[in-house]
View 1 (cartoon, protein in one colour):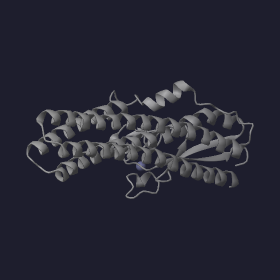
View 2 (cartoon, rainbow, N blue to C red):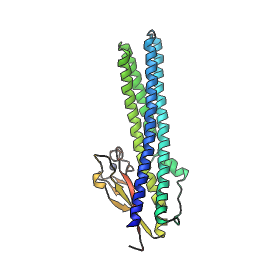
View 3 (cartoon, protein in one colour):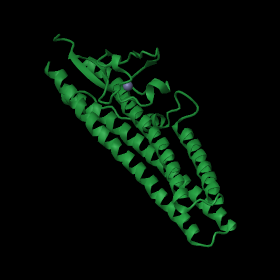
View 4 (cartoon, protein in one colour):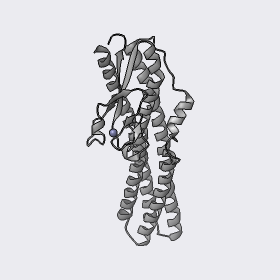
Length: 276
Ligand SMILES: [Zn+2]
């Protein structure tokens, strides 16, 4: 059916654009940590080039700790920007795609600030949202790097060894931050799509179109939701996952085992009620 085909095609294109948008934010996040690592190593090098005084060591360690904290804070801001941008893009894209298929008589829904802010904050499932989790990661990573550098220097390790330890810790911190970014932007994609379709489903139905949402298993392997691939249900219903959790879409179950590392996304199908 032509309608279905074009909506599917448009959704694929949206998914592609959305993924490249997210990749841009991930790149920015990694860059922030790379810059921080360079600065930390420079601080350490300065210390090794000077005459090693314990008093100076404390200052160097504090500086290194603060550089990592700053990078973490910047990273959270980048994540927030990424979630917001991703959500707005997907919300509007679903509207645009629907209007392209159904026609301009479909009223255009807007993602208001309140809905957008609540989507970004994501307090739905637990009190420990991504921002508090991110902040506690930063604190932990910073404390860890501090003690590693201190121990290394006190034990008389040379610059290369201590710099390597810094580098390892920064890698851990960056991948913690990246995991949050991936999980939350993935959630934003699908939550915004659900919101957008929910806004439009009734209007579309009045115009004679019935819509369903479809679980797409994505491209990444191994898939954690292989059995979900292709499952189609009415817009306002919930999917039941193999884990037993119910969810409006990928990344939205509130169960970390289902939401983290999930590469699935929502697609939509539409049918003319009167003609089928
Ligand atoms: Zn999945």
